[in-house]
Length: 133
Image (cartoon, rainbow, N blue to C red; front, side, top):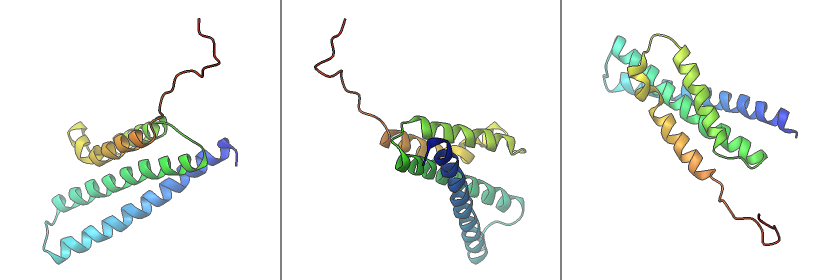
């Protein structure tokens, strides 16, 4: 499959899987909050939004890195671009200011760093037959 088709399909597949995991996390959190008499009202809504965003961002970064790396060898640039896309989309979301960024993107940053570390390329010197100036 050519790159111009594989990369958008990997991104689209990652979005679908990330949204499915976020929905599963939302239903699980709502069930647990109801079962253990958790917070109600606006506080519970903010908690659910932050948890769902953390799950979606983390899953998207990890899955897009895995899918693209399965197609062709990739570098740290893939998770970095995925994380940057998530930052832009979360910022466009609206009512949350910059003080919520660590809570909305914290686990995404951890997944981004781990993905970059796994996708690092070992640098090697030039082969013996190359003449250097």
